[in-house]
Length: 114
Length: 112
Image 1 (cartoon, rainbow over the protein chains, first blue to last red):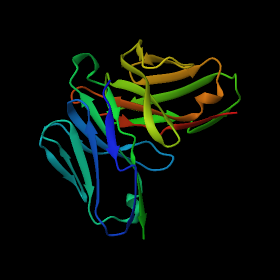
Image 2: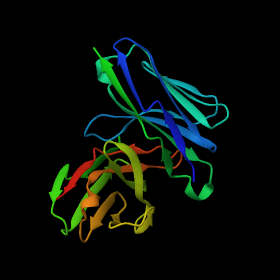
Image 3: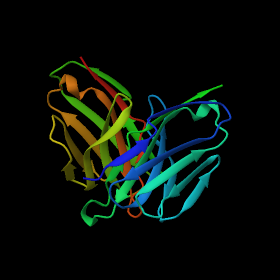
């Protein structure tokens, strides 16, 4: 089946620093999604990417859909303490019968020191 | 706008007891619905998905079952809970296209 490798697994940074995380896939995806999850809550959608090469921003967050369709990255600029949480990437494949199912990365745990 | 509700928020149950978790979606029609389990704060495992009333697909063999009695209602059940059923259960919905999934607040289940 499809697998996603998300890295890094965890990051410890100082407030104000920029953050970069990425996901790579063994197969092609037609949609990439980035979620943030805070303790005890459900994941919240941050950015959705639907087109290869697409670069999308949401405030201090920027994500790109890799041109090969097998990777995506998420950047956070000028981190603040409330950026703390687990960031998940998710991809949706091209197989017609299971188009509605997502494959999730294992998450990047972000800690921001004030 | 669409909203998704899950209840209860937290549940502590003894081993061998039954389970019923409920998920409802508002503000959309004929959504695809999903149940996930998340262990130890990482790794979402898809348990069930449904593309319509009465249509349930199971992703992994397990002690749980799902039902969709109404268009916007999804229920996760068990007849007899196991210790290994403990975890954080998340419901999600999507509409096609583009099938972007939106998650509910989750239910924390502890089986003792």
